[in-house]
Amino acid sequence: MNKISIMGGHVLDSAQHIDKISDLHIADGRILSIGAPPANFQADQVIDAKDKIVCAGLVDLAVRLREPGQEHKATIASETLAAACNGITSLCCPPDTSPVVDTPAVAELLRQRAKNGGHCRIFPLAALTQGLEGKQLSEMSELKQVGCIGVSNAQVPIANTQVLKNAYEYAANCDLTVFIQPTEPYLGRGGCAHEGAISSRMGLTGIPEAAETIAISRDLFLIEQTGVRAHFCRLSSARSVDLIREAQHRGLKVTADVAAHQLFLTDQDIMNYNSQCHVYPPLRTKKDRDALRKGVLEGVISAICSDHQPHEHEAKLNPFAETLAGISTLDTLLPLALRLEMPLPKIIDRLTWGASQALGVKIGTLRAGKKADICIIDPNKKWTLTPQTMFAKCLNTPFMNWEFQGRAVCTIVGGQVVFSEK
Image (cartoon, rainbow, N blue to C red; front, side):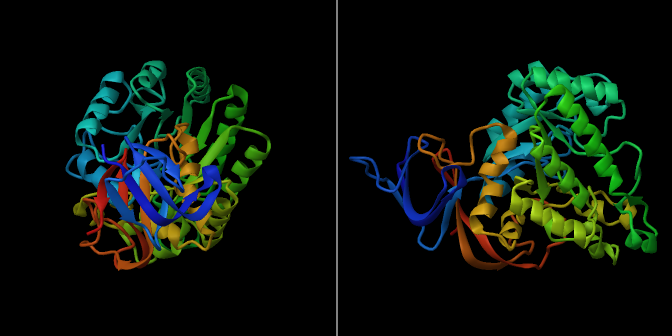
């Protein structure tokens, strides 16, 4: 396997408190050292990283690969390639495929397809309940044995609190993290936009902030009682950030993430019925957006994810309320994060080490001996998001024609260069 030296880059690794210009050396698929190479080390390949950022490969906590079941939208091969071309070396996929990842057989199918056609590491979540129906618990212990790193009921809320409590107890016994998309089962059912003045003016059924905060409150009580590790996915409101902050101060084992688009868009962006802004949870107010940014800055929200949900063109052509929620975001995760008015080391942390903590997998760091998953970023590269500059298969994005500065120019997975800008 190639020996690689990455020379003169701005090396950032929050796990080791590294923030300096240095060299990095790789051999046998693992990181050897930062700084001087080991004795007698001779690189087969030298990468000039002057004026570039060198960090661990990005870790994305929410990528829908659409396989198995919806290959007309995207595939494991297409989306993992797009991820790698955007500096993402590890991604987590929810269990709401078709069929649902609720048996070892389906989990094994996903693992094999990822092994054969994937371009980065895939960490699958298993269903918390069978069929995501919220009635019978899945076989979490068996699902863990075939490689599922956590459990989730995806975007399907569990109405029965007793079932939810039992599920959290079982997950705790299996030492599995529960990934929670907080949604109260009845509030805002059938809604498509944030409940407020704008949705009322537009005649759209609203989803109130309380649909998220009530669910978080219920979950936090059950987490405290059962002792399960929990990660709250895709927060969207200011009050949600407050609830997570309070829980962390009380010592609960909870982390949280936010989708990158929630840090830039608000319900104002749906004013012209732009279906590309139909997302779930919905875009909320400027106050909520600013609170989410503050949560990321403080570390209450430890990860920024893409929440990648590719759709075919036709899925966004109907009237706003009838379109499918979700946008294609692999191409905008890093460039959006780089637009935040935040210290660069914190931004990189939320995309790497901070994100990896939710998975419970020791990735997202450049520590010697770890697998050489590395992203090299040109922070000065100016470019415009167009169909020609996107790597993802589907083009459903509200950021089309946005101008960005900063993009991944080289991605290394397991010591192998899987993407290099020509």
